[in-house]
Length: 393
Ligand SMILES: Cc1cc2nc3c(=O)[nH]c(=O)nc-3n(C[C@H](O)[C@H](O)[C@H](O)COP(=O)(O)OP(=O)(O)OC[C@H]3O[C@@H](n4cnc5c(N)ncnc54)[C@H](O)[C@@H]3O)c2cc1C
Ligand SMILES: *[C@@H]1O[C@H](CO)[C@@H](O)[C@H](O)[C@H]1NC(C)=O
Ligand SMILES: *[C@@H]1O[C@H](CO)[C@@H](O)[C@H](O)[C@H]1NC(C)=O
Ligand SMILES: *[C@@H]1O[C@H](CO)[C@@H](O)[C@H](O)[C@H]1NC(C)=O
Ligand SMILES: CC(=O)N[C@H]1CO[C@H](CO)[C@@H](O)[C@@H]1O
Image (cartoon, rainbow, N blue to C red):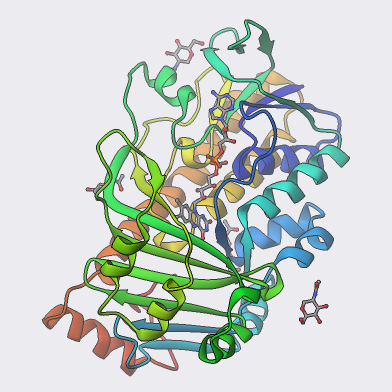
């Protein structure tokens, strides 16, 4: 069969890898509007369910070089004056429990590794190819340069601003603001001179501070030679702006009552981007009865990054979809296989969407009774989290 994937993000690349790994004889073509793979985004946390799949697709050698494996996970109140949660030996515990590593990585490194591996497996790519029209009935797409591309199946992996979605739903809906935005910071550790900070960054760790209306997370990248910090705060971007350069002074001001260690880290930041965090309503269906289109990733389930599951769930979608399509004898099998895909993936992804939203309430409690109750549970379960532990992630 001929499969056309729209979007060379982590979801689209994952679908290409899953398909070509399971069914090498299918022709897989990826259409990507960007003229080339560009360094977009910052750090990502990859949980074992996704790393297991990436390893299965033959990415181990490439990714081990660019990953960082945190050894300690710590949760702190915003003032940083105590420890609310901790896992020592975090990386080893993850491998033991789930049979695959927990990795922190730059999105660009992961995307490049997936792209290279997909090429090795014979996936074809067209960059600078922007899809403008979908013909779901005819199973083809039109590009901005007038070309038409058809296939037995179109996979819409075109992300948060999915045009496939608006055409499928026949509306002009845009993604919705969640009320939060992210400052995303990436720094090289070799710029750090401060002894306290050098000591702090010398050990690969995940550090999560939770506070009123905001939280902050720190983790390493590229074998601990870089660090990633994300600050999650109330959205103050102008209505029609989704991403903009942030004001460093304003950023530091928001965190002036927080852990002095975090403030020292923020003092190192020369520039920063602000990204509006968006979500969207649930689609009734992720595929067409005729079996010509399937959605995956942010195109159908954008979520707050508060459980770090956006990319992980896109990779899971890709694996399930690729494995199922590989079972098709011809395209008449597609409608039933896509229904199975939707049945397996839609409820689970939606749990992640909802769970990530609930996590905001837990992370962003203001000082008061609820916050004290949260902290009491965390401290009681410091060494052995029980079911219902407030930090599901
Ligand atoms: C601050 C922040 C932190 C995050 N942290 C994590 C984390 O720790 N862990 C995690 O798992 N996830 C995280 N995420 C989420 C994760 O980045 C996304 O969920 C994931 O990258 C989505 O992948 P995707 O392939 O579905 O979409 P995208 O990565 O958006 O890819 C879509 C691709 O389609 C292309 N495209 C779009 N329209 C067209 C068109 N018309 N024609 C051709 N091509 C087109 C785009 O150029 C793009 O390359 C985070 C997100 C944010 C904002
Ligand atoms: C990672 O860093 C350690 C310590 O600095 C070094 O010994 C190791 O070779 C590095 N690994 C890779 C894959 O670069
Ligand atoms: C994710 O990992 C857990 C633990 O190993 C496993 O029970 C679960 O089935 C996995 N889910 C998916 C979708 O891979
Ligand atoms: C999207 O975010 C808004 C604002 O936080 C929230 O009310 C809504 O329930 C979210 N939608 C989904 C599907 O999670
Ligand atoms: C949900 C949806 O858009 N379904 C469409 C699938 O395609 C057929 C034609 O092949 C349409 O009739 C459906 O409306």
